[in-house]
Image: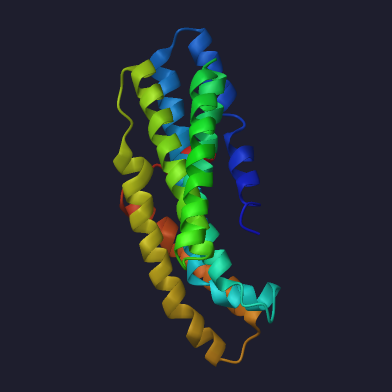
Length: 225
């Protein structure tokens, strides 16, 4: 449920990553950097929309798909890490496409130790439950992202535009979550089936997400090129 949207990220990035490798083979560093920024924006923009949807409507989704199990906390816990997981995967793909296998291996080993250590500590010493596992995964992914982006910036000798990649998608995500939270109950009060309410709420929230993104000056054409 939570990781299936990653297939769309891979599909949309399929035409970007080979172009990065080709640009590097032609010594066109500037174009390769631009494509890398585009791939990171694509991952971030899509993943924050998925995260906002699942976190805000975690209870209705859990009741629709897994009635009686009360899995909303599980959905929230893993949803919070989606932007980290997607971004980490894209960065690993870019680095490998550049021929840099050292950084992905190093980050994988470090992530393994961090995740296992934090899961053991948070699981044994605290009552966080699934949230402790989520915190461990997010922490490990955040460190891997930092190391990978540092390696890329050092290679290109340029800084990525973090406002475009992270800040603006977060603002759009917050606005989407606000719309989702305000629209769901009125739809339920109309007596509509849960699946209809979730679907209608999703399209409303997504519309707000895209409209605000355009208002903030984000180049959405890059999502389809």
